[in-house]
Image 1: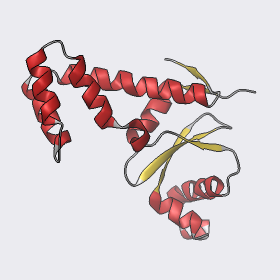
Image 2 (image 1 turned 60 degrees about the horizontal axis):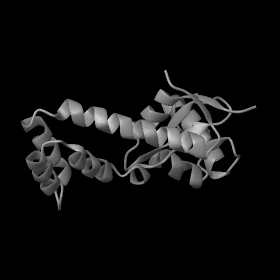
Image 3 (image 1 turned 45 degrees about the vertical axis):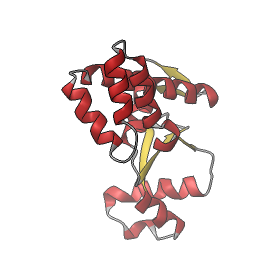
Length: 156
């Protein structure tokens, strides 16, 4: 039986990841689960699940299953796989206003690029355009990931 997931849940899993957490798809339920690095380290150290608060026990147990490679969980693309910087570049290059395109493209070079970009899209009043562009890019990442992993998805 093929897994069927809601694309919105995959996208949400992509968005919620951070430097300290990763998202996984439970192939038995089709649900996306966010696991922190702390929970993964606890599982790697083989800490007893009972030593954790009730709310965290299930997550540590899932982390153990992931580490044991039970086959029930599959990692979603990480924030590094998604490469939001590349999405920002594509957005800049997609703008019809060449002056704005050049300005934004120049702002995303070097240290502090994300902050400068965020400030500029608000200054130019194109934040809504950026977020729509970014959402569409994340949706495409989710669709490609599902297809690459033979996972059926429903969009809405």
